[in-house]
Length: 367
Image 1: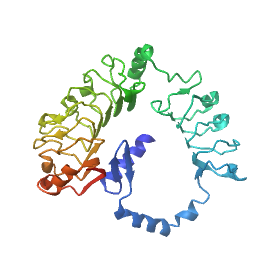
Image 2 (image 1 turned 90 degrees about the vertical axis):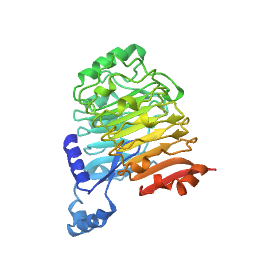
Image 3 (image 1 turned 135 degrees about the vertical axis):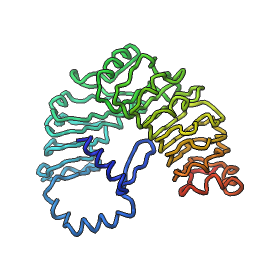
Image 4 (image 1 turned 60 degrees about the vertical axis):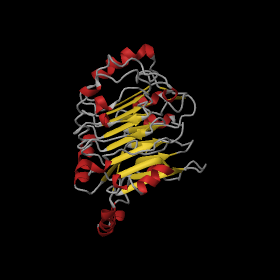
């Protein structure tokens, strides 16, 4: 069903009826052109009355209020909640989104539950063994242990999430067997503090992998990255390598979204960052670097599909690249910090670099 939904979304994007935007993950929205027509269609088709007795989406705030007396009668499909208490009398669910550390034992009774997400775990938390009773569960998403170091304990029979250096070989062996795996995230403990990822060279990525996140230090670029021909999204965070990562990445044939977050320790980026025709499908490029001072040049023919260029936390960035004006596909340029001298040049003698970009904006000016 996920593949069917993805194909429909891709078709709507292709028709211009949905817009895709990538920051830290992909999300879609209805373009303004279609907003009014959608509302008219809802009214003309009497949509509200038709769905009155259909499956329901519910949201419960953490305000101490008890659940409505007839709550168990609703045919709830999705529940968004931040409550710390529930009496367990909930109808069949297909998706639950939990915003606190709480998951009650009654979760085992939700036989139609398909997605369970647990995050904001500020202390060690244990999933109930009853979760093994949910036969239709398709997605189990747990909190980011980079932020919440207590971790999550899971019951016997579901596997373990506490992967250490001693378990790396077993993890790699298990991942290789997941032939249909499309999304994988490998995180070093306390990655933002410079912790190295385990030795990854023996790893062989699953053949259908499309999304990959690597958080943690690397000694050098991974030699198996060019072999992931189906990769569409890559985030490389806190690797802090001296080698230009794009020397490998620019030849990935399907890569659409690339996030380099403190991935490359360099003050200057030259034209070697992308050859002519390099990054053929790349639409979004995000660079976060406290070291970067100048991107010197983009060669003509590089980034032929680039639409969105973002610079995050680049406090020292003083020059945008010569050749940016030749990327005709670019629609959006964003900087979290914009130095005053760079702003003045872009408003004056270097305006030719960005005048073709329809949306140029920033969050914080630096005098």
